[in-house]
Length: 334
Ligand code: ASP
Image 1 (tube, rainbow, N blue to C red):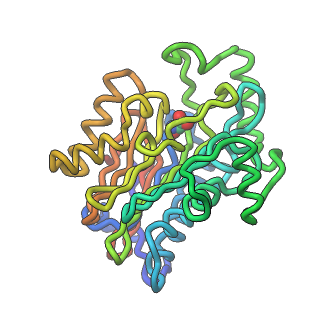
Image 2: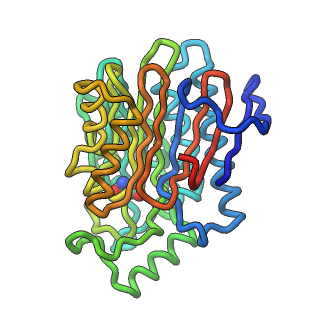
């Protein structure tokens, strides 16, 4: 188990050896998806992943510490960093579809008025999370998909890139391997689920005003059929926020999260049954496990209590608490 605790005094990261940071006083948490099988994670990649998570949390923390900083801006700032890192299956470094294209999904939601914005299967937007925010703030819709969503982002002045920008050597190799094994996610129950599709990213945050927000961004499943949109872009499945209970971001086998309305299920257990974040999220993850699927959740309640359960070997994740202490874990340490 790797545990890192840092102090963010004036945003100056300092390693300490004080053990786990307090998980009941959290203001921002991020995930970088389910972890690769441990034996496949090289030391170099582990360093890169830890460093990106740290930068992402710092960016979110900076937003939250700013005068008038909001949880919504913090979530977007944190996710942008992870989208720009080639280590995760979101933005640059996303997986290929079976047609060797890259199609990205993202969603953002704020807990005050339950406003939300999402994009699905976009191919040209450098930071899909910004496009999701634009859908929420600058359109009357919740979900835009495909070329029209790309065009919407362009019209709103977001950074547009050639699809080549998202491609990495690692994902190209993964694509060739999947193609050679003729693996497909279109088969019922996806028996040949590939652990290499990992790396969806997400964030949840709580600001000074007591407002929660959640966001998620992904390239989806490796070798997915073009046009497939996963849980990340679907409110109530992979992303949810409502100040009355919690903010949620999920990762894992998206179809299971959609069918079980997983993120909303966490909210419902907390709101209607007064379950804690830990109880509600572990019950939902148990359901995913029982279906022999894999997945993880980050759940932050309106008082700053955080839960990060997962059914898998590991989940890249981290958080910062009110005292500015940061903790990052990849495996174990639940
Ligand atoms: N949940 C994502 C999807 O199904 C994938 C992942 O989290 O790894 O699109």
